[in-house]
Length: 79
Ligand SMILES: [Zn+2]
Ligand SMILES: [Zn+2]
View 1: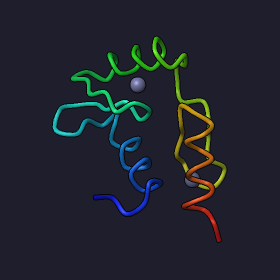
View 2: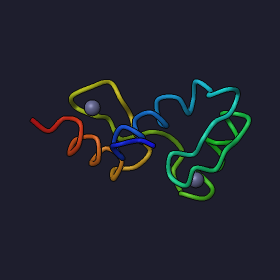
View 3: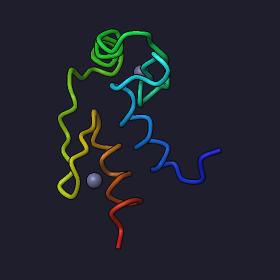
View 4: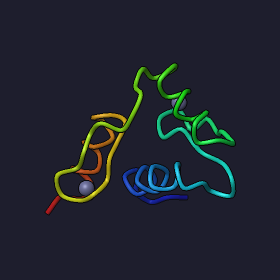
């Protein structure tokens, strides 16, 4: 399995919109969709957010949730 939750999160988010074998995973609840726009709708409908609005100040990654950004900052960008 993944040795680090942050790595797993980054991995899922990075690939959720590029398509992993033609599927898109919700970075929050891991529900799988076959279309990126369905995932987008799901995140808005279920998790109440329309777009990735949290920018990491130290790399180009963007996140749907502040908690995800927090995980990245804590686990990945920690000195
Ligand atoms: Zn979800
Ligand atoms: Zn970052």
